[in-house]
Image (cartoon, rainbow, N blue to C red):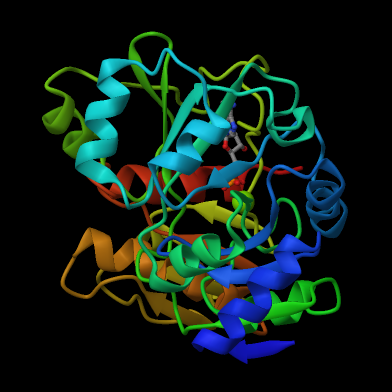
Length: 319
Ligand code: AMP
Ligand code: MG
């Protein structure tokens, strides 16, 4: 059920979370599918609704330092503390030592837990009202495009969830950056906070685990992910023969290319945050257009361009 995210709706959703149910809600990244992170039975409903494999751990959303102490154990690396001060509340997820209160299902049996304080008004109020940490992956079927508005959730998981809090499109439109300390700070998933900003805040280099180098020992880093229902390839659209454009859709960075059956521009001014915010909405539009394939143009791999290209590469891998 879609509900405008008023105070009443948020407290009703919080009550659902407290009683072990599932709710969908907006965050500053994408819409999340949430359940009480301290209740394994509630969390199991997330995996069931998304058809998500249980080896793929969930991110736990907290409201404050007291909740942090509930889900993580010392030692918290000093660099993690610095990252929290700089980026929380906000779209940076930190992988930290797990407290035994957190069910193994949430962390896929790992000794660490992924955690963040969301900056979105609705997400933060929901966690506060629920009074428990909320485990929430994106509110979409596993492997499919992430939802950046309530209608995306309604279309795919509408019958799976008691309540969808609607607060319009999400501001960042791309998932959080996931940072682990191995012990060197390492980005496990590029996302809404650029590596450059993290390096500046931490005062050191930050490594990135790319698709090519990621091993099965890092769970959830599945190469194929974020995929539309039709094939997607990364290609220079100018090099595509005009007769091959007609039945295809174009996802362009700045400029349209004539002859495509459908086209979406990520950012006419070449603004990478704007491009990231539009990415999934445009892919949702294209996958439901009358076309057979999506041609995605390459994006400059700096700043948020790294996260965008990560999503496009995973979307382009054939299952
Ligand atoms: P999401 O699907 O947006 O909820 O993101 C969850 C992703 O976070 C997983 O697919 C993993 O890649 C990552 N993750 C969660 N928990 C951990 C952890 N304890 N260690 C490493 N990566 C994690
Ligand atoms: Mg997801």
